[in-house]
Picture 1: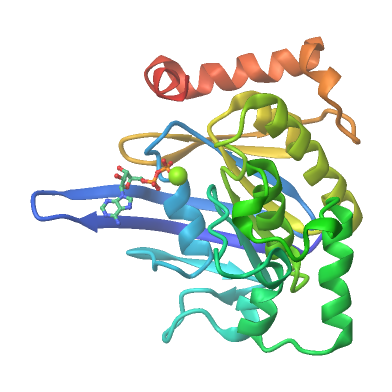
Picture 2: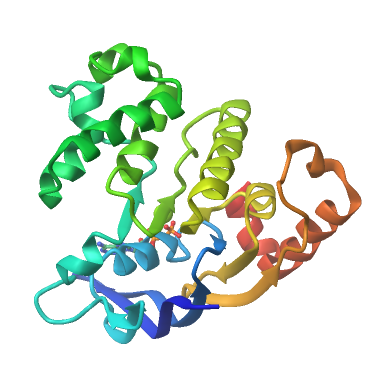
Length: 265
Ligand SMILES: Nc1ncnc2c1ncn2[C@@H]1O[C@H](COP(=O)(O)OP(=O)(O)O)[C@@H](O)[C@H]1O
Ligand SMILES: [Mg+2]
């Protein structure tokens, strides 16, 4: 099994006028190619900071991050060859309002200079995959919140990245809709075999989706434990009530502890 991502003793501090915040302290993890892992923890434990460092948006204060053995945080920012390997889905889809749905999905292709019929066809294939082909020419203001989120997902997939980073992607949606999109995401993953890092503060969601969960604690943000989820695939929503599922949730609840749980609920 090929190692895809490695964090090696990563620390990130933020200096404000009054204090230094240690957002992430001495964080190490390894992720194998094709894995679906979650990073789970209370609000403020450094989840977004971790994933933004992996995407090269911010640099670690100490330690190193590698994709395919290459350092992400080299001088001059993220190397272009690595940039192409990563897709990022944010909590808010952040679509450009003056672009159509299709133009929004195609934006990463323009940024990365990927041209030609093959890529244009890919945009249409992805729109069809999430049932949005009829809305290709609509503007973002004309479609629902769930549709906007789907556009955000396929925009992150359009350049065929090997790694997908998702920062609480469906957290702003109501629960039923979120669960539906979670299941769609698992189906996409099953087809594409990408490496996915999924960030959430929802224990059930993490157990439902992941093969492995990195559980974080706060003050300072740090890795508390790693939990392997041995539930069979494909996963389905009716697993949530089964004993082995609730057993995992109880174990993780114990790891996170009462203090942080109050920030999750
Ligand atoms: N740009 C920043 N400047 C100062 N503090 C920050 C900045 N970004 C994050 N932090 C702080 O770092 C900690 C971790 O934040 P974050 O990674 O956003 O947590 P999470 O995503 O788990 O909610 C928090 O205390 C947050 O206030
Ligand atoms: Mg966050």
